[in-house]
Length: 344
DNA sequence: AACGCGGGGCG
DNA sequence: CGCCCAGCGTT
Image 1 (cartoon, rainbow, N blue to C red):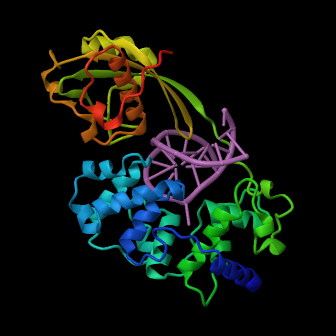
Image 2: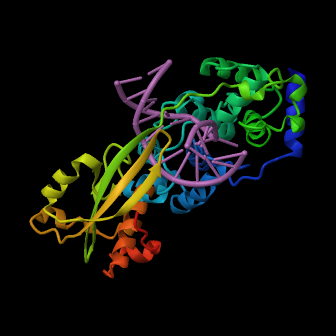
């Protein structure tokens, strides 16, 4: 196995990736990067990394912020529980613990993130197994569906003695991210191709995970007034963020009745999540909150609240419709720009 | 072990 | 379109 490690380390020295958090020493900044990278491509994480750290440069700054401010900084990055967990974590500890075992106890840190922070920030000899490492090891050892436990043991056994553990973890991840790609890997460029047991059929290792994408028919109700749009705090999906009322399409008539409005159809919006395909009918109605005094204060400028992308699409659609009708749009208009309304 | 949870880029 | 991404928490 020494040959394996030497070949990879030599390759890494010649092909380093330049990333904003590469070489970072501050454990907090490493943590933010690793949490952002959970199920998120590096290219997508980078702008959020800068924005979040500019807003909350230290654990203390994060601790003293409100959850809503934190979610606002996270807006657009997805998997918003990550932001919630980071905020909660900041309340729980004065400083980040320095061991894998302690890090693993923190909210939002699982085996991968705890290992990444422990090795990168504190030099602990612990292997970090992410999707890249899973794929690399599955191919090297020709494993179609390796258990997480097995992968951790394999990765742990590969940690070189003389090398900084954090560096080594990045070596494997970099190989997976740039050479050992999910589809059409560059085996001819791979430093460990001669040792790879799965080289003959890389598409077979690891095997595909089955997924079940279901469709959902929803409706959104955009109630707008001079002071803004009626927003509520969302629960369940997008919990903690804000949005207009969103519900199964078949509940439309009931919800319309309960609000006492007479809405018009403003078009349709599609939004895809990993496991869901959402088709949202957008309805708009003028509203001043009459007959619902407690709701009146919920008429706000959506630009001030953390919104999921889906809600941005819904508002944009509503706005385009209103503009097309020659109706003065709500304050949100300037923030996002108006696309022409396209019927159907 | 299976599922819910965003958003985006690629072939 | 389907696939997958520097995963985690819950059941």
